[in-house]
Length: 521
Image (cartoon, rainbow, N blue to C red; front, side, top):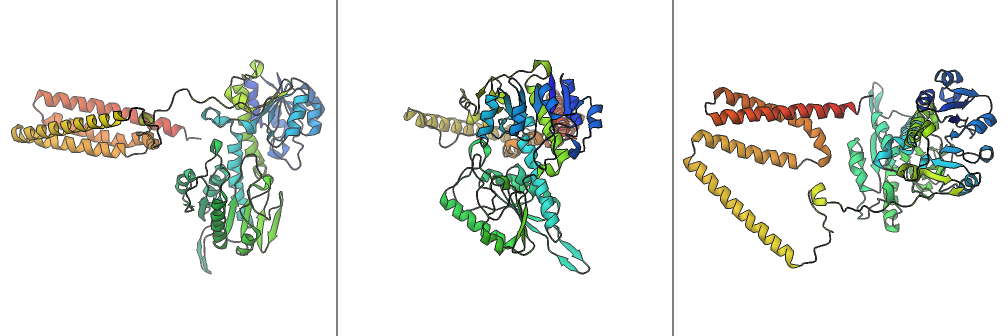
């Protein structure tokens, strides 16, 4: 099966759908790869490098489009490119069907099967195909680089012979992938960073990166469908705008990333806020392509107003073309592998990833995909999270909770009396050495239970590393006990302690090594 990679014809586009490294993966899947001449020149991928990777260089776009069974693109195809396509041909790229209805209809009329990488469902199994997150990460990082280029001072505070330079203050609006990447980059340059998002779930992530999270004294939550932000109420927006107005007076750099799927970008920075900012300040608007979060943003340009530079670039990922192309190509290769790869390539509408990204197929528009069915098994909150939500529906029998509570109370009382009686017996008749050991054992159980049970479930895997040290202490205690104990029972218990602690240490190191291997380059 022939796979074509044409040169992007969109104005000033420097990316390419696949780099030579990705071509090697595609050839291993069984594809014959055709690359249009100079397609990757702007991304540091020469024709010679593609040929070394095993690709064939096509001299003309017409020849590539007519020969290829599968076409990989970065940007949506133009009218001229759609006219070159034929029925049964497969197009994979960014399509944006929500805002490109005429293009979607034209592709369906041509009989083209279209896979939109921007529509890949955000599920755990599809993380390696999530190009939106990968490109947003680059955009957030590049936004800080552009701001640092235009900003007239250090980001980090400096003490020089000529005087002290205050650190820059950066406000990042939006705690998505781009916003978190911008926070990371700004903190890396030494700036004082503040973050804001309507979703309070982002607070912990922002603070973990060393930034201050700005919180509104408001009960409304901003979590929307699919993890995106939703449209907020008028009262919330008024409080939000007041916060931004206060921050604009203080900060030196503002990065805006707020977007709502299917809508124009919300206006968060007014002209008055811009005029209140200090001269030399910078605003980088990552939502410029959707109208911008700043009222003075001009898409694709940098404008200056009252001494404030407003960056409206719509191609921030494209300003790092080599990296963007490599990450984008990896996602395309993962999609082709998901579809079978090579001669086994199929459009499996039962595959939730393929169906979620399928826009046109067999002359029909297939987007949006049907919503998935609700899970047939209700979640067990008591098992998964340790407690049930307060909003859970109470049982139908009103007397059952009272009876159950009375039984639990009786059981607790009996257990407490039995435990107290056992302690009295041990204290009165057991040897002094046993009483001391038993006291240490009970206290250790209680403290250990309190420590481990209080740890957040998300940290249970890293906690394995900590248990290695605890198990090491147990082994030393067991060996020490074996060296002085004379009773057979004490020797057996010491051997068991050493045996199980050794298993725990070995397992802990194994889990830790596997966890660290995930982060190695």
